[in-house]
Image 1 (spheres, helix red, strand yellow):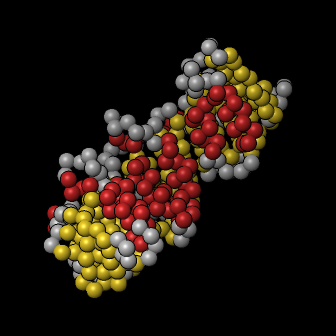
Image 2 (cartoon, one colour):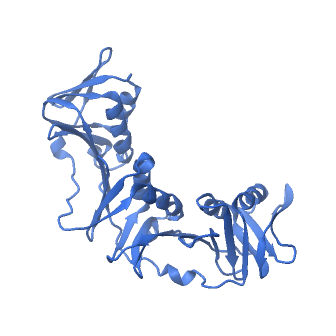
Image 3 (spheres, one colour):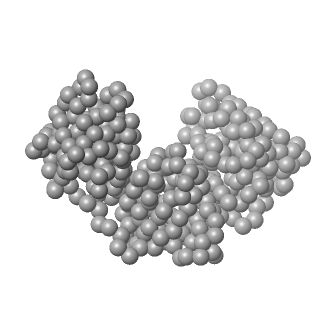
Length: 363
């Protein structure tokens, strides 16, 4: 291997892939990134056996080759170099890195030992706008569970229902559902939330079409010159639609910014009680009020004007309420529930494309 590449391109590619290299894995080579020349272009790749990310960048190649080097060291070193041209030369298993004023050698491991994710030979293919996919992931992925005891809840469920494509995540305490639009094909994918978080980072400044290919075991996302492959989670996703109420005894419509403010203020007094706040909707006073109590510090009640139908109260985790409010679109939100023991639903007042469902706390 003998090539030249710009510091900016190499640093960006390493930043894309290196975060999934796992130093705690039993295979030492998984702490490395794969640097390989393919068709006069430079490929940077990493995998943890469940997720693989590949970033292809342009370079001036004088000699072909491949090597794996420690991901953390390579990323930190290249990001510390000044902008300009970097020369990479491979001699045996040692990668020589040089610029005008820096010369370094990093010991590598043969690329032949690096595991490769199997290719999707005969998969279903579809496309979605990058901006839409990014927004959907921002609204959904945070609700996924991190508890490996229930693996299906650690995924984002991408599926079709009655001709529409949905993206859903839940940790059994709250649930986020996003409708992406119509889709005639039948889909039923359970993608690890960790892979979706990596995809969200890759999509940070990408608005063009994303190509998605999947079979029964894997899914491949193509984002420009970056590819992310993830193994799908096995198992049956719970029938979450049974949890979402169709009608509500109490519903309040108010300004999202005002509900965010009174929830934030109330959450300051809810730290002792694991974020517990009680929300009251009063149609006579035309307001929503939030009360929280801290036995050592005091108590707080904050209110905001609202259009209320019905009336009553419910106790919720303030963090889940704020998480839902932060990703809602529009100026007005609708907050609806049926008594103290049933789930409540947060949504934008002008659309049903996104729902944030929160299970109540015992008060």
